[in-house]
Length: 330
Image (tube, rainbow, N blue to C red):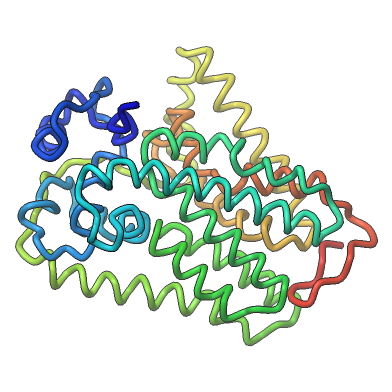
């Protein structure tokens, strides 16, 4: 019953570990550097960055980390929760998000004439499992995307745009999801759907401006691995690591096969959930070796693909029930 394990504090990250000890007492440390939760915990303690020298200073790259504001904002009770509540709230927020994501996915499946059991494609998504394990923001971000798709297919386009903005404020890469959905709308002749991209972009820029004002003079601890590289360079450089580790070869090879199978199937259909995930396939081509090497990081980077894969293979392709928003898959 020690929720600090989900803060993903690392033995080789003493600054964040000591920060957590000062607020919580004894905490659980993981091997090596730990993971994202160790950064979201100080963010959740000061989600408005009103005391950045006390909290944001323990981040490696303050502005970069602080872009992902909505998960720590929710877990921190919008700045009202004390640290001992925050550490539990981070866990509970992700648990509730997985449940809500399952419900939304099940409702989408019913709208498209499939079994509501497809809702399990959310909690059984390997990328979201890893996000949950490290106290990351990916679960909340993707559930906002699911909510946006549900709003869109039920004719509430402005609600969809607002939810896509929330997804981008949870994890900035979710802008790619909004681009994919917008492209599908454009293909289907809905030319005024540019708000699906514009509102998330404006929200991200506005928050970034606020951050640069609040975090002026806060340099953080530096460090961090490169995320992007030249096209396919990361995959090429990671392959020797896969050869040395049979488990990496099997896991990453499977993820790669799923990505290819998903792409071939998704581009022939009109599922907005799938088109939102397609840009992540394109982004995979420019991921660095650090991401491609580890199944853990690769699965997190491709998380939207895995839930969408279940839908493109199990949603019936003929005679789906009409919906008031986007046209159903054909």
